[in-house]
Length: 495
Image (cartoon, rainbow, N blue to C red):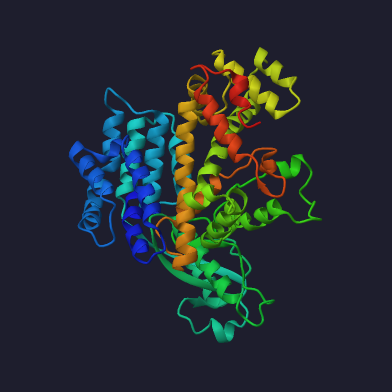
């Protein structure tokens, strides 16, 4: 998807929606990202991609056309090349391999829900090997799109006689009952008719998500009615022909949680409105809103907190500096979040000295410091899952080389939040909700915007940013620390 986004950017530069500077930054970041990608194949293809990216990919250039021509060479056999690398003497790290497989399958069009079910089904088989998993992943990557017949029942469709019954996709209650019986669905829901769609998708969950997007478009259209109080009300699930159980129309919530609203008991304290409160209202769409409005609202919130229009340096650097500042804050908050999560997962039976130390802690900061100290000392933890093992390994790397590791993390977050800014510009200035990376920008930015306790204090004194400078200072200070850093220092980077 990253290469497709680079090719698409030329159209937006031609329309003056994206600036050449924004695209140049992205191409440089993409070049760094492709460097360690073992799925790209031989050195000749890598060299040609590097040359094309360095050309700037002007809107009407031959380099841009050549990049489009090369994309099938990159995607075809991508996972097979990763499988070969995993079977070689110099194997990639498990986490890098997992990210490559998951990202590629998502880019192919598979839904996250289907992939989650797929991984759980494979994990239930104790005889499964890595080679088996990669072989099955290659099969999914090569799978062709299929047509899925999806029924979306509604409890209420206002004015359906005049507005819905003439449409070929509308099914009255009697025909809906026949459809349920034909496809052997037991216990159909109560309804007053349904829309029957055919979607082309990679998997059944992706088809249900497409149905959900269609329902949102219907609701948006309905909002322009003079009788808007009579709402369009779907049952909330979609039935797919050939699939035994109904599926939710909407994806799970994005999980953008601001725990300080609960821990500081300010959830319902809205007697006054300040810049932070306004930013929370703008960003609320991140959890469950439509991608376009979520991206626009999220960036408005970020910029309102982290850009200072009165600062000449900010104006010269551009509004994308807000993305870089947020990346620094999140990078510095990340170790604390990982350490806190691990501290609550460590529950060995019987208790060990580490769990006894944790039992005496009153605050999460204290717990995270205990875990950091134990990891630095080489004390084994009692993880409850493979993801906990991966988290512990990541934190050990941070303790050994904090500046290098946190700088890498910040670089990743910079890419995520700058992509959010570019997609916001495409929505707001290009008037498009069909950009290639819009959904990805929404999902990945939301996944990285989970705020730690006390994180809402990032804005103080008149609503101006207080933590961005501190985050940058802490990262720079990490570069002056010894190679091995104490657990207390890592846990308290932005505490």
